[in-house]
Structure formats: structure tokens, C-alpha cells
Length: 184
Image (tube, rainbow, N blue to C red; front, side):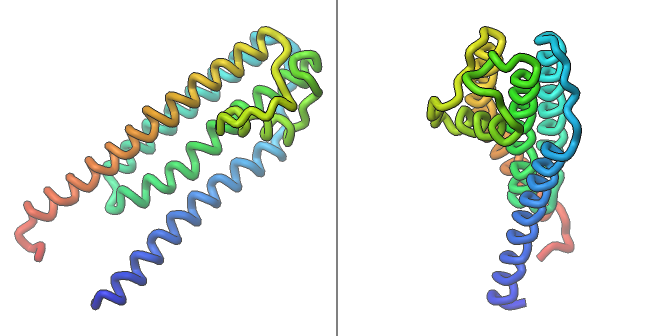
């Protein structure tokens, strides 16, 4: 296979990985809008749901890091992992904000629909914070503060862990190739 064939194969692999990541994100967003959210009326049940969502996110990230290091294409696997992990993280908080607003409209400056909750979460995640929706109640402010802290961890430590997993996967592939006497 010449350089041109290799280049088209690489383009195809990158496109397929990006498409799988986008598909995973689309499925998560669709589930966010379609699945019923249990409207508990206590802040404790909402905090438990948040903790559960964070644990699911951490479990997914642990599994993804392992999958990246074992992949034949660690960089592409990392692209797919980010397509799943970032939307999941954002949607966990959007769900919590929606539940908090539904339980007590006074938690925020305005009642939040699912779209409003998603918008609010993205403005916090991106550190834009337009100020059109703000947390009013202490419990809502605690969740927003937790999201801000976790945003920093996910963006800093999470990206670093994924990049290190890609490097370990590539190093494994290189050592496997050099140990295989049949490799060119």
C-alpha cells in the first residue's frame, strides 16, 4: 500500500472514531431528553443521584483508560472516549440541576427546563457563566461549586490521564512490534 492508500486509511479511521464519539454523545443527549427523571423532593436524594452519576463517570473513565492502553489505535480510542465521557459528565450535572429546579423552583433565578439545565451546565463547564441563570439556594450553590471543582479536575487531570494512556498504548504497540520477529 502506497502513501496515498495509507493516508486514506488514516482518514477513514479518524472519521470512524469521530463518528462513534459523536454518535455516543448524541445517544446520551437523546436519553437525557427522553428518559423520565425521578422528581424527588429532597436535596438528599438529589445529592445521592449526583454522587451516583459521578461514580458512574469515574467507572467509565477507568474502563476507558484501560481500553485506550490496550487499543490498536490508542489516539483514536481516546477520541471516542472523550466523545462519551464529556457529554456524560455534562449531562449528569444537567440532570441534577433539572431535578433541583423541579423540586424547588427557588433553587435558581428561574425554573429550569431540561434545555435550560443543559445550557446552565455548559456555561459553567466552559467557565463562561453568562449570569442569566444563577444558583439561589445554598444547596444549588454547593452543587455548582462541586461542578466547578470537578470541571477543573476533569479538564486538567482527566485529559492528562487520557494522554498518558495514549502514550502507554503507543509504547506497548512499539514494544510488541519490536519483540515480534515477524514484524518488518
